[in-house]
Image 1 (cartoon, rainbow, N blue to C red):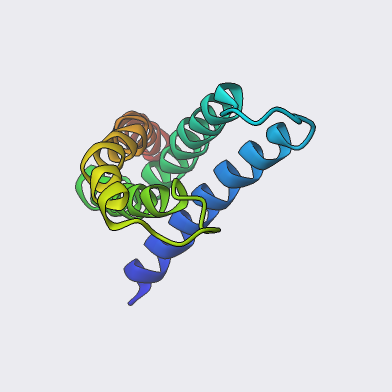
Image 2: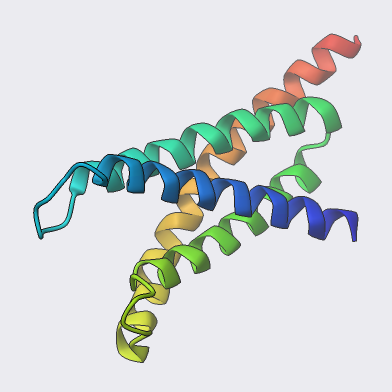
Length: 133
């Protein structure tokens, strides 16, 4: 149960920070089109938060496998949440678009979380072992 809570907390924080970032950047933009800068900045926030938090997790646990799997589960939750949030949640969900987002966006976001998590966890485990030695 502890692992499930850890995964959900991390996923909620990552999604909330990315959404808040995109919303704050988009706040002053009165144009009707998509704000590419807000999306890119949200991606950067996801990468940085994942990298730093997984580094701390890896340093604390000193075990790569379980820590990386935790972050991979976070990536799946963030990916699914991103596909749902991409719909805007205002006009309802379109099954065709949601299906396309699950196929295209979710794997991208899993990678967006997974790659920095692998790097952060690996470096954290090495730092944790170095600290204990």
